Length: 529
Picture (spheres, rainbow, N blue to C red):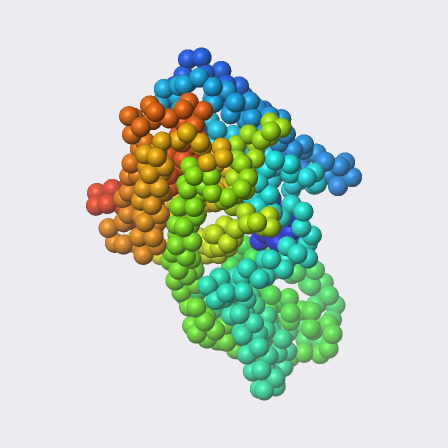
């Protein structure tokens, strides 16, 4: 019942699709902002036409999302077929006559924006009820499209069954707290012992410091509420009419103002509501307020104890492990993707298919049976764990200055761009006729970025600065024109990954702390995510 922007995301297809559409939209904004800073090449009508198609697709997607999902109206947003056709025409156009390097780089940037727009359109269509099969699109990128709720829930549960998952940690901490609260309430034979369990549920936080802050406020509020409830009971005595008249307005005040005022107001007002309600059921004395105070303090102590014993630092301790695991999983995928583009490893084609649609690099991102390859599965799993850690990290108290200066979002972008590069980078059957020097350059550049990714996983104090070597001009002159554009895609993709690593490193002395803004990632011109 919470607003969509405030409630946790579920495991279903709609929430997964909306989350994917949101991430792709953020990347699309970065790419378009960078395109706005580059003057278009004269006569490059293909890029202009594709950009107009992107704009039209964004406008239609926004209108459909504003209308929302209409269960009886059928599909409210068509798939990205029109935009796919524009991309296919664009790929054919740029594979024709040779073009200067600057034009090739800008065309690659336009293509990355189109890829993001296709992702946004497809994910939004799935979220709004679209059920058409995703012909020509990377099946592994939209793997959830054809799965049922039970399967998606099982995937969510299985993916978080690891002690490095903050979701698992929170669930285990809460379960232990409730079990201990039930044991204490039963052993001590506390009256209204369920209040102990409610205190554990409502006051538990993801860090010990935040739990202590909530417990202090709740204890003060409960003490004030118990005192007010005692005065009410002593003053009204056994007159049930007084309690009946006060119950509804008191509930209205408690359940509207209480959450806004924090734990102190919430616990204090709820104590008054409880006393007013119980007084109508059976005769009560001021000792009811005393029992409420004892139960809340007992539950608070149990919740604080669990917070101290089970992952007291919350996501601040886990985010380094999660980001390190993501970087270590992404490094081999960088090598494999660059090798597949230039040497044709695997089976399957990328780029424009025979029917003019966009096709994924199946040889890199899928196994022989059509399922995602182990490298893609591992990177995707580590990305999900890291995203959950980052989301919780942003809700917790501010860390120290050293941790706050690190741009964790850039690390997440690195993992996401690595995956989408494996999904979307075009290739043409190993590029026959490619000079050996080009293959050597691709291997060395990818190895340089992969090695830097592994170094970044250790979070060195001086950060990671890597500049992959560009394709030498004298070598590029000997590359056939149809193959130069895919090589440019690889080059700018590797450069984008390198800049993400630099953005995720601590700032050098004298630099401003890293902040994720549209203009901060100048490498987004090379972003295939």
